[in-house]
Length: 226
Image 1: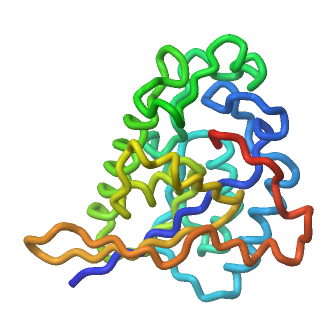
Image 2: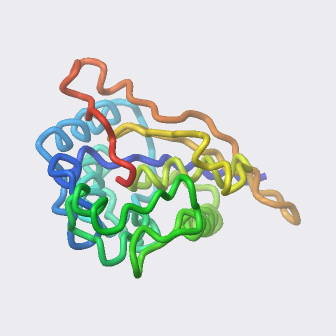
């Protein structure tokens, strides 16, 4: 039996979170000052832990790429490999708007309707979760037997629980998951010839590295998409 270890890291606090704007490819301008400290704290925790990662993957959005780049030295200087399938839910034409303007122009309640898109050209929750499951499944298959660190987003992290714990898409909002910036979620994926992959959740939203930072280590009131 072959075991693959996936360490999903939600990016540090982003400037888009601070500015309360929709952080797609246009709205994302990278990490905030607090976000860089959060990820540096995780890097410091890993530096002396003996963690031996084989690959370092990242979403293509700047906040995730910066997160991976801060973590890379603590992982033996691994090259950051960017994967477009790991981005947060695609916002569509509302990208870059303030969340107040978004509510005025669109105001879609995606918790009430998982098949509604955030705005024209964007994704629905249902479509996004399909992408989350597909992309993480492919990573587990393509990197079988490896330890893979994935710098990604709250939607990817929390979506992994929906996908691999077997939650119906209509019930996904009931979980009300709110992963923390720089939190670590770990899956161990077992592969046996002729059988489906077995996903075992080892930890969710591990933020032990933020404990010494007090209130300065936490981002209050996380937005719906990050």
